[in-house]
Image (cartoon, rainbow, N blue to C red):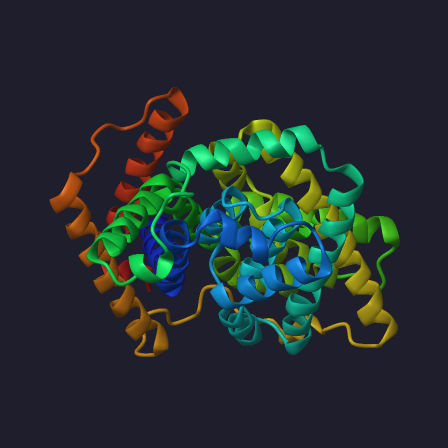
Length: 403
Protein backbone atom coordinates (compact mmCIF):
# COMPACT_ATOMS: atom_id res chain seq x y z
CA UNK A 1 0.00 0.00 0.00
CA UNK A 2 2.82 2.39 0.93
CA UNK A 3 4.72 1.54 -2.24
CA UNK A 4 1.59 2.16 -4.33
CA UNK A 5 1.05 5.57 -2.71
CA UNK A 6 4.64 6.66 -3.31
CA UNK A 7 4.35 5.52 -6.90
CA UNK A 8 1.20 7.60 -7.37
CA UNK A 9 2.83 10.56 -5.63
CA UNK A 10 5.77 10.39 -8.02
CA UNK A 11 3.42 10.16 -11.02
CA UNK A 12 1.32 13.10 -9.79
CA UNK A 13 4.42 15.29 -9.41
CA UNK A 14 5.66 14.26 -12.84
CA UNK A 15 2.27 15.03 -14.39
CA UNK A 16 2.03 18.47 -12.75
CA UNK A 17 5.56 19.39 -13.84
CA UNK A 18 5.05 17.99 -17.33
CA UNK A 19 1.84 19.92 -17.89
CA UNK A 20 3.53 23.14 -16.80
CA UNK A 21 6.41 22.34 -19.14
CA UNK A 22 3.91 22.11 -21.99
CA UNK A 23 2.48 25.54 -21.19
CA UNK A 24 5.45 27.63 -19.98
CA UNK A 25 6.28 29.17 -23.34
CA UNK A 26 2.64 30.24 -23.77
CA UNK A 27 2.77 31.96 -20.39
CA UNK A 28 5.91 33.81 -21.41
CA UNK A 29 4.48 34.81 -24.79
CA UNK A 30 1.23 36.06 -23.27
CA UNK A 31 2.95 38.11 -20.58
CA UNK A 32 5.42 39.56 -23.09
CA UNK A 33 2.53 40.69 -25.31
CA UNK A 34 0.69 42.10 -22.30
CA UNK A 35 3.75 44.01 -21.12
CA UNK A 36 4.42 45.45 -24.56
CA UNK A 37 0.80 46.55 -24.93
CA UNK A 38 0.94 48.31 -21.56
CA UNK A 39 4.18 50.10 -22.40
CA UNK A 40 3.89 50.89 -26.11
CA UNK A 41 0.16 51.14 -26.91
CA UNK A 42 -1.52 54.42 -26.09
CA UNK A 43 -5.14 54.77 -25.05
CA UNK A 44 -5.99 56.85 -28.12
CA UNK A 45 -4.61 54.20 -30.48
CA UNK A 46 -6.47 51.41 -28.68
CA UNK A 47 -9.74 53.37 -28.78
CA UNK A 48 -9.41 53.80 -32.53
CA UNK A 49 -8.95 50.07 -33.19
CA UNK A 50 -11.02 48.46 -30.41
CA UNK A 51 -13.52 51.02 -29.21
CA UNK A 52 -17.23 50.38 -29.04
CA UNK A 53 -18.82 46.98 -29.63
CA UNK A 54 -19.21 47.05 -33.40
CA UNK A 55 -18.57 44.21 -35.86
CA UNK A 56 -15.19 45.63 -36.88
CA UNK A 57 -14.01 46.08 -33.28
CA UNK A 58 -15.11 42.60 -32.24
CA UNK A 59 -13.56 41.05 -35.36
CA UNK A 60 -10.26 42.85 -34.73
CA UNK A 61 -10.29 41.83 -31.07
CA UNK A 62 -10.91 38.20 -32.03
CA UNK A 63 -8.10 38.33 -34.59
CA UNK A 64 -5.71 39.87 -32.06
CA UNK A 65 -6.69 37.17 -29.57
CA UNK A 66 -6.10 34.41 -32.11
CA UNK A 67 -2.66 35.82 -32.90
CA UNK A 68 -1.69 36.13 -29.25
CA UNK A 69 -2.70 32.51 -28.45
CA UNK A 70 -2.17 32.91 -24.72
CA UNK A 71 -3.00 30.70 -21.77
CA UNK A 72 -5.83 32.06 -19.65
CA UNK A 73 -3.64 33.67 -16.97
CA UNK A 74 -1.63 35.65 -19.50
CA UNK A 75 -4.74 36.49 -21.55
CA UNK A 76 -6.35 38.00 -18.44
CA UNK A 77 -3.46 40.41 -18.07
CA UNK A 78 -3.57 41.39 -21.74
CA UNK A 79 -7.34 41.88 -21.60
CA UNK A 80 -6.97 44.17 -18.62
CA UNK A 81 -4.46 46.21 -20.62
CA UNK A 82 -6.84 46.53 -23.57
CA UNK A 83 -9.81 47.41 -21.37
CA UNK A 84 -7.83 49.99 -19.37
CA UNK A 85 -6.49 51.57 -22.57
CA UNK A 86 -10.04 52.31 -23.77
CA UNK A 87 -11.23 49.20 -25.62
CA UNK A 88 -14.92 48.44 -25.21
CA UNK A 89 -16.02 45.65 -22.87
CA UNK A 90 -17.30 43.39 -25.66
CA UNK A 91 -14.11 43.65 -27.78
CA UNK A 92 -12.01 43.14 -24.63
CA UNK A 93 -13.93 39.99 -23.67
CA UNK A 94 -13.84 38.83 -27.30
CA UNK A 95 -10.06 39.11 -27.18
CA UNK A 96 -10.00 37.11 -23.94
CA UNK A 97 -12.21 34.34 -25.34
CA UNK A 98 -10.30 34.19 -28.64
CA UNK A 99 -6.85 34.13 -27.04
CA UNK A 100 -7.79 31.16 -24.82
CA UNK A 101 -10.00 29.18 -27.22
CA UNK A 102 -9.05 30.05 -30.82
CA UNK A 103 -5.54 28.76 -30.14
CA UNK A 104 -3.42 26.79 -32.60
CA UNK A 105 -1.39 24.86 -30.00
CA UNK A 106 -4.59 23.97 -28.15
CA UNK A 107 -6.04 22.47 -31.31
CA UNK A 108 -2.89 20.38 -31.75
CA UNK A 109 -3.12 19.00 -28.20
CA UNK A 110 -6.83 18.26 -28.67
CA UNK A 111 -6.02 16.34 -31.85
CA UNK A 112 -3.45 14.26 -29.94
CA UNK A 113 -5.69 13.35 -27.01
CA UNK A 114 -9.17 13.42 -28.54
CA UNK A 115 -10.49 13.49 -32.12
CA UNK A 116 -10.92 15.86 -35.02
CA UNK A 117 -14.51 16.64 -34.01
CA UNK A 118 -13.22 18.23 -30.83
CA UNK A 119 -10.74 20.29 -32.84
CA UNK A 120 -13.59 21.61 -34.97
CA UNK A 121 -15.65 22.13 -31.83
CA UNK A 122 -12.83 24.12 -30.25
CA UNK A 123 -12.71 26.73 -33.03
CA UNK A 124 -16.41 26.75 -33.87
CA UNK A 125 -17.24 26.90 -30.18
CA UNK A 126 -14.82 29.78 -29.67
CA UNK A 127 -16.67 31.82 -32.27
CA UNK A 128 -20.04 30.88 -30.78
CA UNK A 129 -18.81 31.91 -27.32
CA UNK A 130 -17.89 35.34 -28.64
CA UNK A 131 -21.24 35.73 -30.39
CA UNK A 132 -23.32 34.68 -27.37
CA UNK A 133 -21.18 36.81 -25.04
CA UNK A 134 -21.78 39.84 -27.27
CA UNK A 135 -25.53 39.26 -27.18
CA UNK A 136 -25.65 38.76 -23.41
CA UNK A 137 -23.56 41.85 -22.64
CA UNK A 138 -25.64 43.92 -25.01
CA UNK A 139 -28.82 42.85 -23.19
CA UNK A 140 -27.53 43.03 -19.62
CA UNK A 141 -24.39 45.23 -19.53
CA UNK A 142 -24.45 47.52 -16.42
CA UNK A 143 -22.82 50.75 -17.64
CA UNK A 144 -21.94 52.12 -14.22
CA UNK A 145 -20.31 48.87 -13.12
CA UNK A 146 -18.36 48.69 -16.38
CA UNK A 147 -16.95 52.20 -15.96
CA UNK A 148 -16.04 51.53 -12.34
CA UNK A 149 -14.20 48.39 -13.43
CA UNK A 150 -12.38 50.34 -16.15
CA UNK A 151 -11.18 52.93 -13.64
CA UNK A 152 -9.88 50.19 -11.37
CA UNK A 153 -8.11 48.56 -14.31
CA UNK A 154 -6.45 51.87 -15.13
CA UNK A 155 -5.15 52.07 -11.59
CA UNK A 156 -3.63 48.62 -12.08
CA UNK A 157 -1.91 49.87 -15.22
CA UNK A 158 -0.01 52.48 -13.25
CA UNK A 159 -1.19 55.78 -14.65
CA UNK A 160 -2.41 57.62 -17.73
CA UNK A 161 -0.28 57.50 -20.87
CA UNK A 162 -1.66 60.55 -22.69
CA UNK A 163 1.71 62.31 -22.41
CA UNK A 164 3.76 59.19 -23.05
CA UNK A 165 6.28 59.22 -25.93
CA UNK A 166 5.15 57.89 -29.27
CA UNK A 167 5.50 54.11 -29.42
CA UNK A 168 7.81 54.32 -32.45
CA UNK A 169 10.23 56.36 -30.38
CA UNK A 170 9.79 54.37 -27.17
CA UNK A 171 10.26 50.96 -28.80
CA UNK A 172 13.73 52.02 -30.01
CA UNK A 173 14.80 53.28 -26.59
CA UNK A 174 16.36 51.29 -23.76
CA UNK A 175 13.91 52.91 -21.35
CA UNK A 176 10.97 51.44 -23.23
CA UNK A 177 12.24 47.90 -22.90
CA UNK A 178 13.19 48.50 -19.26
CA UNK A 179 9.52 49.28 -18.67
CA UNK A 180 8.54 46.09 -20.50
CA UNK A 181 10.89 44.09 -18.24
CA UNK A 182 9.38 45.69 -15.13
CA UNK A 183 5.85 44.95 -16.25
CA UNK A 184 6.72 41.40 -17.31
CA UNK A 185 8.06 40.72 -13.83
CA UNK A 186 4.97 42.19 -12.17
CA UNK A 187 2.61 40.08 -14.30
CA UNK A 188 4.33 36.89 -13.14
CA UNK A 189 4.41 38.17 -9.55
CA UNK A 190 0.64 38.61 -9.55
CA UNK A 191 -0.30 35.02 -10.49
CA UNK A 192 2.61 32.70 -9.65
CA UNK A 193 0.83 31.37 -6.56
CA UNK A 194 -2.38 30.59 -8.47
CA UNK A 195 -0.42 28.91 -11.24
CA UNK A 196 1.59 26.72 -8.86
CA UNK A 197 -1.47 25.52 -6.96
CA UNK A 198 -3.45 24.95 -10.16
CA UNK A 199 -0.84 22.74 -11.78
CA UNK A 200 -0.26 20.80 -8.57
CA UNK A 201 -3.96 20.08 -8.12
CA UNK A 202 -4.25 18.97 -11.75
CA UNK A 203 -1.55 16.35 -11.30
CA UNK A 204 -3.15 15.08 -8.09
CA UNK A 205 -6.57 14.78 -9.71
CA UNK A 206 -5.20 13.06 -12.82
CA UNK A 207 -3.53 10.35 -10.73
CA UNK A 208 -5.50 9.94 -7.51
CA UNK A 209 -9.14 10.56 -8.50
CA UNK A 210 -10.71 7.37 -9.94
CA UNK A 211 -12.58 7.50 -13.21
CA UNK A 212 -15.78 6.23 -11.59
CA UNK A 213 -16.01 9.56 -9.75
CA UNK A 214 -16.41 11.41 -13.06
CA UNK A 215 -18.90 8.78 -14.26
CA UNK A 216 -20.97 9.43 -11.14
CA UNK A 217 -20.63 13.19 -11.52
CA UNK A 218 -22.02 13.31 -15.08
CA UNK A 219 -25.46 11.70 -14.98
CA UNK A 220 -26.14 9.35 -17.87
CA UNK A 221 -22.51 8.98 -18.94
CA UNK A 222 -22.06 6.12 -21.36
CA UNK A 223 -25.69 5.96 -22.43
CA UNK A 224 -26.40 6.15 -26.12
CA UNK A 225 -28.89 9.02 -26.34
CA UNK A 226 -29.02 11.75 -23.70
CA UNK A 227 -32.06 13.94 -23.18
CA UNK A 228 -31.92 17.71 -23.05
CA UNK A 229 -31.87 17.88 -19.25
CA UNK A 230 -28.98 15.40 -19.11
CA UNK A 231 -27.06 17.41 -21.71
CA UNK A 232 -27.76 20.57 -19.72
CA UNK A 233 -26.45 18.86 -16.59
CA UNK A 234 -23.28 17.80 -18.43
CA UNK A 235 -22.75 21.34 -19.74
CA UNK A 236 -23.16 22.73 -16.22
CA UNK A 237 -21.09 20.07 -14.45
CA UNK A 238 -18.23 20.45 -16.94
CA UNK A 239 -17.18 23.80 -15.42
CA UNK A 240 -17.68 22.34 -11.92
CA UNK A 241 -15.29 19.49 -12.74
CA UNK A 242 -12.83 21.98 -14.24
CA UNK A 243 -12.98 23.96 -10.99
CA UNK A 244 -11.19 21.08 -9.25
CA UNK A 245 -8.70 20.37 -12.05
CA UNK A 246 -7.95 23.82 -13.39
CA UNK A 247 -4.55 24.73 -14.84
CA UNK A 248 -5.65 26.36 -18.06
CA UNK A 249 -7.19 24.88 -21.15
CA UNK A 250 -4.06 23.16 -22.49
CA UNK A 251 -3.42 21.29 -19.28
CA UNK A 252 -7.06 20.26 -19.05
CA UNK A 253 -7.06 18.41 -22.38
CA UNK A 254 -5.64 15.12 -21.01
CA UNK A 255 -8.29 15.19 -18.29
CA UNK A 256 -10.95 15.96 -20.90
CA UNK A 257 -9.87 12.72 -22.60
CA UNK A 258 -10.55 10.89 -19.32
CA UNK A 259 -14.08 12.30 -19.23
CA UNK A 260 -14.73 11.41 -22.86
CA UNK A 261 -13.41 7.87 -22.50
CA UNK A 262 -15.82 7.38 -19.59
CA UNK A 263 -18.88 8.33 -21.63
CA UNK A 264 -19.28 12.03 -20.89
CA UNK A 265 -21.15 13.74 -23.73
CA UNK A 266 -19.56 15.95 -26.38
CA UNK A 267 -21.31 18.94 -24.78
CA UNK A 268 -19.96 18.05 -21.34
CA UNK A 269 -16.38 17.59 -22.55
CA UNK A 270 -16.42 20.83 -24.55
CA UNK A 271 -17.87 22.66 -21.54
CA UNK A 272 -15.01 21.27 -19.46
CA UNK A 273 -12.46 22.48 -22.01
CA UNK A 274 -14.03 25.92 -22.33
CA UNK A 275 -14.35 26.32 -18.55
CA UNK A 276 -10.87 27.75 -18.04
CA UNK A 277 -12.40 31.23 -17.73
CA UNK A 278 -15.19 30.37 -15.26
CA UNK A 279 -13.21 28.84 -12.40
CA UNK A 280 -12.02 30.27 -9.11
CA UNK A 281 -8.37 31.13 -9.96
CA UNK A 282 -9.57 33.25 -12.89
CA UNK A 283 -12.38 34.74 -10.81
CA UNK A 284 -9.87 35.70 -8.15
CA UNK A 285 -7.55 37.41 -10.67
CA UNK A 286 -10.49 39.21 -12.28
CA UNK A 287 -11.50 40.46 -8.83
CA UNK A 288 -7.96 41.77 -8.32
CA UNK A 289 -8.18 43.66 -11.57
CA UNK A 290 -11.75 44.98 -11.48
CA UNK A 291 -13.43 44.20 -8.15
CA UNK A 292 -15.63 41.26 -7.09
CA UNK A 293 -18.96 42.57 -8.45
CA UNK A 294 -17.63 42.96 -11.98
CA UNK A 295 -15.74 39.65 -11.75
CA UNK A 296 -18.96 37.81 -10.87
CA UNK A 297 -20.80 39.58 -13.70
CA UNK A 298 -18.22 38.42 -16.26
CA UNK A 299 -18.32 34.93 -14.75
CA UNK A 300 -22.09 34.80 -15.24
CA UNK A 301 -21.83 36.03 -18.83
CA UNK A 302 -19.17 33.46 -19.72
CA UNK A 303 -21.03 30.60 -18.02
CA UNK A 304 -24.28 31.39 -19.84
CA UNK A 305 -22.47 31.69 -23.18
CA UNK A 306 -20.54 28.48 -22.53
CA UNK A 307 -23.59 26.36 -21.73
CA UNK A 308 -25.54 27.72 -24.70
CA UNK A 309 -22.67 27.25 -27.15
CA UNK A 310 -21.79 23.69 -26.11
CA UNK A 311 -25.39 22.44 -26.21
CA UNK A 312 -25.93 24.10 -29.59
CA UNK A 313 -22.80 22.44 -30.96
CA UNK A 314 -23.80 19.04 -29.57
CA UNK A 315 -27.16 19.12 -31.32
CA UNK A 316 -25.58 20.51 -34.49
CA UNK A 317 -23.00 17.70 -34.63
CA UNK A 318 -25.68 15.16 -33.79
CA UNK A 319 -27.92 16.40 -36.61
CA UNK A 320 -24.98 16.15 -39.04
CA UNK A 321 -24.04 12.68 -37.78
CA UNK A 322 -20.62 13.91 -36.61
CA UNK A 323 -20.67 13.23 -32.87
CA UNK A 324 -17.33 11.60 -31.95
CA UNK A 325 -16.89 8.03 -30.74
CA UNK A 326 -15.52 7.58 -27.19
CA UNK A 327 -12.98 5.05 -28.47
CA UNK A 328 -11.04 7.97 -29.98
CA UNK A 329 -9.94 9.18 -26.53
CA UNK A 330 -6.38 8.53 -25.37
CA UNK A 331 -4.95 8.08 -21.89
CA UNK A 332 -4.61 11.22 -19.79
CA UNK A 333 -1.37 10.35 -18.00
CA UNK A 334 0.66 8.31 -20.51
CA UNK A 335 1.95 11.35 -22.43
CA UNK A 336 5.73 11.74 -22.59
CA UNK A 337 6.09 15.39 -21.61
CA UNK A 338 9.85 15.79 -21.69
CA UNK A 339 10.90 15.20 -25.27
CA UNK A 340 12.92 17.16 -27.81
CA UNK A 341 10.32 19.05 -29.83
CA UNK A 342 9.25 22.61 -30.56
CA UNK A 343 8.20 23.16 -26.92
CA UNK A 344 11.76 22.55 -25.75
CA UNK A 345 13.16 25.32 -27.94
CA UNK A 346 10.30 27.71 -27.17
CA UNK A 347 10.70 27.09 -23.45
CA UNK A 348 14.45 27.72 -23.65
CA UNK A 349 13.80 30.96 -25.52
CA UNK A 350 11.23 32.26 -23.04
CA UNK A 351 13.29 31.11 -20.07
CA UNK A 352 16.13 33.24 -21.44
CA UNK A 353 13.78 36.20 -21.93
CA UNK A 354 12.39 35.78 -18.42
CA UNK A 355 15.87 35.52 -16.89
CA UNK A 356 17.04 38.69 -18.64
CA UNK A 357 13.92 40.60 -17.57
CA UNK A 358 14.15 39.41 -13.96
CA UNK A 359 17.84 40.37 -13.69
CA UNK A 360 17.05 43.75 -15.24
CA UNK A 361 14.19 44.27 -12.78
CA UNK A 362 16.33 43.31 -9.76
CA UNK A 363 19.23 45.54 -10.83
CA UNK A 364 17.06 48.59 -11.46
CA UNK A 365 14.45 48.47 -8.67
CA UNK A 366 14.95 45.35 -6.59
CA UNK A 367 12.37 42.71 -5.69
CA UNK A 368 9.36 43.67 -3.53
CA UNK A 369 9.44 41.76 -0.26
CA UNK A 370 6.49 40.48 1.75
CA UNK A 371 4.00 37.68 1.42
CA UNK A 372 0.73 39.51 0.96
CA UNK A 373 -1.21 42.30 2.55
CA UNK A 374 -4.41 40.41 3.37
CA UNK A 375 -5.45 37.10 4.86
CA UNK A 376 -6.34 35.46 1.52
CA UNK A 377 -2.92 36.26 0.08
CA UNK A 378 -1.19 34.79 3.11
CA UNK A 379 -3.30 31.63 2.98
CA UNK A 380 -2.52 31.31 -0.73
CA UNK A 381 1.19 31.76 -0.01
CA UNK A 382 1.12 28.93 2.54
CA UNK A 383 -0.75 26.66 0.11
CA UNK A 384 1.81 27.49 -2.57
CA UNK A 385 4.68 26.49 -0.30
CA UNK A 386 2.87 23.23 0.46
CA UNK A 387 2.43 22.67 -3.28
CA UNK A 388 6.15 23.15 -3.87
CA UNK A 389 6.90 20.72 -1.03
CA UNK A 390 4.51 18.16 -2.55
CA UNK A 391 6.10 18.45 -5.99
CA UNK A 392 9.64 18.25 -4.64
CA UNK A 393 8.76 15.24 -2.50
CA UNK A 394 7.15 13.49 -5.44
CA UNK A 395 10.25 13.90 -7.58
CA UNK A 396 12.52 12.72 -4.78
CA UNK A 397 10.58 9.46 -4.42
CA UNK A 398 12.60 6.62 -5.93
CA UNK A 399 11.51 6.20 -9.58
CA UNK A 400 11.24 2.44 -9.16
CA UNK A 401 8.34 2.96 -6.73
CA UNK A 402 6.34 4.46 -9.61
CA UNK A 403 6.64 1.24 -11.60
